[in-house]
Image 1 (cartoon, rainbow, N blue to C red):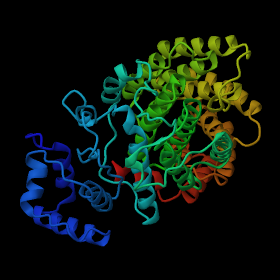
Image 2 (cartoon, rainbow, N blue to C red):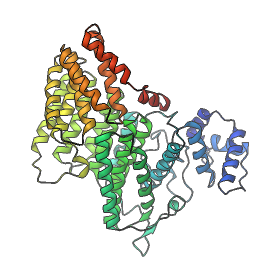
Image 3 (cartoon, helix red, strand yellow):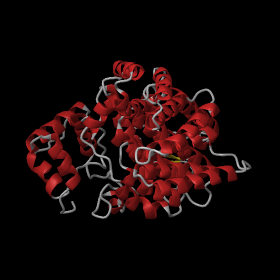
Length: 498
């Protein structure tokens, strides 16, 4: 008992709308249904959890997490409730929220596998029940960057933070109730690494909607594997698999409009990458959260995250990775109408990209960023700036056309974005005939993906058609877009979740 109110539990309790007596009865009923009929929670005990920070014994925290998850329709973890698992003595202040660290980020090093497994398990439960996230809010970029700065800039203590016995293999007891912990070898890890490549290729080709559940399920399995202590060289590779899967889970969640869920996965990915000693991967994971912020109209938050992503990536970051980070920063600057800063940042990106001699093979997670993607991001940045400065529209068109020429097979979603950038730039540049052509190509290609983000970008382009509403071809296009548009799926999901 801390003697201080548990503000996290209090806030979620208020959102849920239960009375204290009702919550006590639900806890007893749920516990009995899961094999704990002896539990006898009452109103006064619920009051102590909220008002004095008392931490209930197992299985109550897990029961509460399940109840709040189902009630609110979004993933609620034990940490979200302000609790930590029993048996973690001496770590409480590392994971409990404080004034300086309101979101409990970063959590203690040996908590990452637990947080990962709990969060994915509840995400899968929501998926099975057909629920979508609700009641959560995105953490501000300043909140995340302030909380994670010192942690990300220190060397990971992979070996020091794990318990050791005579055997090099040691299971974390907290994992037994979630996964039958067992050691794995290099062949199993190679199979997991290949599965990441399959999921990544599918996402690039078709969008995140169809495979998100499979990725989350695979990540949940890896979290269970991490409950077992492997030799360092295998443990680091396993953390790498976890980081790659968490980024994919986050990107796919973002792709279908589950924004707070996506952000949580990006943060988990950064933690996993750092646990494995891969600081460039941690920085790239945070850059995904920054891209999400720009997409949602919060470029200032994106720039906060990009400062941390760049500085936290470390000295081993390859020039091509640095170039990718610059393009995201430039997009955020363009969203704010900062044309001079955007052009300077894109110039740095181009110089970094061409300076990469290719003598060091890029990591698997950077192989998707090639010359086509560089031009695609430059097109997007200039198209975004064109909303503030129409003279940028012509440059956006040039980069979008180059990106399309360079695109190879298996990147259907990226081609769609290029078409939309090109069509939007043509509308802004007062070339409705070319805009109509590329908009129709975008419509055709969109039917082959399950990405809600493409529909968001289509809505942005549709807004630009308004000034040409009287033109015959454009009026037909507007009608076709209205007929093709889904019933605002990502906007619905985002409204429910935020």
